Image (cartoon, rainbow over all chains, first blue to last red; front, side, top):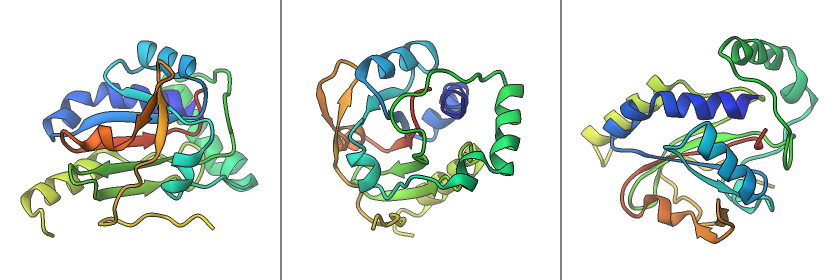
Length: 142
Length: 44
């Protein structure tokens, strides 16, 4: 549900994100057919990739959540938000315990923004991402 | 122990699969310009 919500938001904000000079990509846990289905239906503007072995997740410092991070009160609140926005729970693929993250990587391969989910459904605000990108564009050495 | 990456650190160039099942190095995503890269909890 939260992944659907996030992908839909990426698609919704794609013009704003592209205008900031960023391409869009997402890695999910599952088979290529799952990535294909998601890109096709939810976010055709996003390059969808998959990583069932979790190698890329581990390399980026992502971790599996504990009980509170997966079913705690914040998760229920996030679920209500996602449902109100039209997201629904689908078939879960891969590892439902893994928490997500969002990164901006520049052309030199340097991380310019990093946000790690503190619980399931914890997404960064687009305004925060774009503010960081704009500040970095103004002062690339900063 | 998996460590969180900090702003300013190099992004790992791990290999994943594309939607056609072909190996795909993450560095391809940013070779032509910056990218907003999301890691989803799962496809579901």
